[in-house]
Image (cartoon, rainbow, N blue to C red):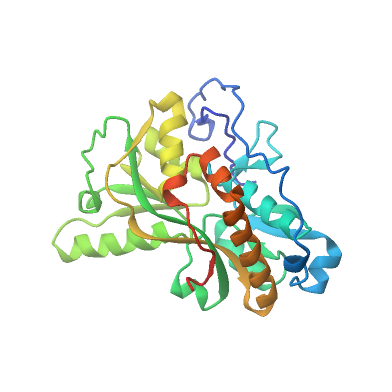
Length: 300
């Protein structure tokens, strides 16, 4: 079983996997968005593929360990987060109920292509390469951020300072690709390569950083900011203060054969933007800096 990140309002980093003692859990209640006012839009629901409309559920593939986007509530079973709230609201607008499946990030696109899930939503960047396989309904703008130990003991001020150091990234992510590119850039400049630790566990990556096995974690802006603010009451990590690297949109992944579903989700998202529900969600989760004003499919 893969490690999972359990989050309260103060993030707990369990170090049992590396032989250390975990910190005592905090029990404050995480935020959640009030979605009770979201009502079904019959015109948008009419755009749904018949098999999804008749099922009454939207099967969502995610990698539920990525706060504030998606993570488990204190019961270890209930998904929550900004993305969870947003896909619930989109589903409600379409007369559906969101049903999450937790899986490795690297398997999300395959699960979508094979029909195991209807959509993916896991802080996945909408890129030209991924658009060759699936379509995206863009719902947020983010970019790569460098997170280091509190006090930045290794003096990482930007990507070039990663030469000769170890960094942790998630398997199949944009951060992994950037890490490889940065390593090649270091070597071309006559500097030592970047050593990548590639995993499917945010918890494991954070344990590596906290114990000094890596100098930095590359992660998306919302996650890095949230973790730095909450882990150990803000005493474990900090985010290097620079503009997000390779900024771009997050997208809800949809199979290319399901163009009608993409249009329905796009319409529902735009309706939520227009009626203020979207702003309520991004404000609740303190990620307004990445908010969008217009829903798009594949950036258009």
